[in-house]
Image (tube, rainbow, N blue to C red; front, side, top):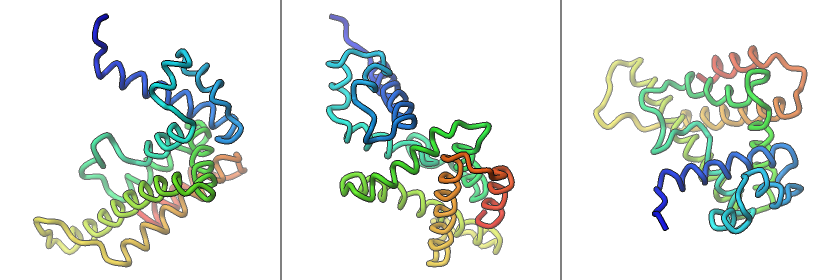
Length: 196
């Protein structure tokens, strides 16, 4: 039997995750049967379960995914405003599907009752918050024109500002997930202006 490449395996894993995102966005984590996710993936049940042995493992994979990071870390040279614009673009109707917004809200709701999921969600949230706080510190240092080789350390104010920005983005996702009658373009610009 020929050996399957790692790229092929990784692509198959990403396909499963995308199928699960679609099913979870439509039905919710709790109501989505694994059989529906297996069917959406186009794989046999046995093959599917070799990648993800449980719904919890699949949810944890999704939680560990798209949050503003790229593979291997955060994009270099991005400003706070650019990061916030990118994060809002994931859920801004009508250009983006509300599926991601629904997933964001479901993740936080499920994390409220699942310690394992909460640990993953909080870890990803903390990494994003700390990254945004470092961007704020770098922007402040650049404004003073006294850059240091190691980069500035974020202050408590930088961290609080980053936390407030992410809280605003969660609220933004809530509104998008229910298709609230909101001017999302204006709201996104306000978040960028206030927190960027």
